[in-house]
Length: 527
Image (tube, rainbow, N blue to C red; front, side):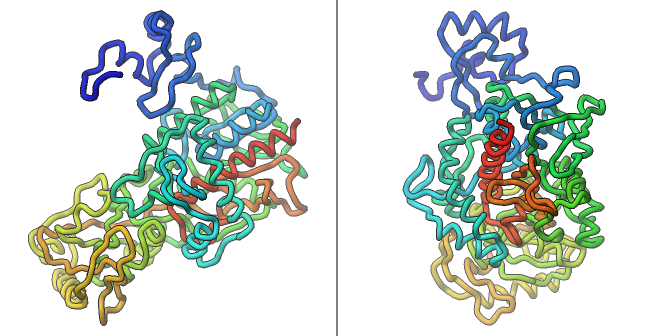
């Protein structure tokens, strides 16, 4: 065991380098590993593989080209994120040949899963990094609370029950977990955090898929799925060329339509053109639209989505989780007129963070501003962007280009409505304002200690809820019942369970459960 703090030797650095060219694999690592009887270790937390020749070049993966792909795979998986990978791995392990088509180029593979960091997991007792217990009824009640009851309870309970088995399955397939992060408001009992985040999870699954023989093609756009009572052909562009595939079964796990701003504007109105898309720019809904146009049953409201408040300085696309602003529970949030518009302390953040995108979207110019003081600065996960700072409220309003008098009056009224009491930042503390409308029902402390800090908030859309209707086996439903060889998983069918709102980590639970189920069902169909 190398002592903590000791510098890595050249040999150690070679063995821990996660992505070396094949020439280095053959000329340097192969004899080195054979001589020392070792196997590669990944800096992303993935367990070392058993040594085999050319392991390092295999780990880089070899993208399929038009000349090498299988034109008639047993199972075709459309998509490249968590749900798609779970489906591909499960189908392959069930004995099917599998081709996976990822819309993005290889460096951006993984869809929105690249930006995730945890999944919500039922467990009867301590499980891995998860503490205590989180039972089915409590999990369901948490979901019903954020969705307002707009959920298919049968499918929801199925996801919840099966989530417990997902934890060891994920570990078996290369995912590693870590204790919950500081500033995540007591998720150690309910949510399992990925070591290395979503990117590490995606890379672990791709390594597993490659090792067991799943073919993967990047920059691959599906144009049309020919549907009668079953999918007979899939028309796609692979390696820049048009190709027709004839799979035995198809799993669509290609996400929603959030990156198509015109589609968002048709659903939301022109205000949607001010939205930021915190997820992948490749989820444009082509597969979803193609299937809906052919009569596949839809589910979910096109105006509902997972939308959070993100930093207004974030890029238009792909800003990810580092642009999310978690300061809201400890702040006052005002609109461009300097007025509060909602209870910032309504519930613990994991149950309420996903409503703030919609709340901000309803404000003039789709913008809000969170204001905190120095004593709250260390209580939340910071944005990748530093806050705007000033020594006075007037000075902060000026820097944020807000009306100074209105902001000062709002903060003064809020401070006057705060009362003495115990403050507990990681749980509901009942420290509420008195005589204020709207109230702040928890974590209401006066904003009095300079420097004062501000963040501009914009709606950040992660994924949309309009999707394909599925049954309890993940099979897609057409106008005349189940489509014979078509299954769906992940965001493209999440509207079956999420009618509105969001529960932290639940999207990953849906994707993992339905991905595995879809892959197993598709493989069983072709056997």
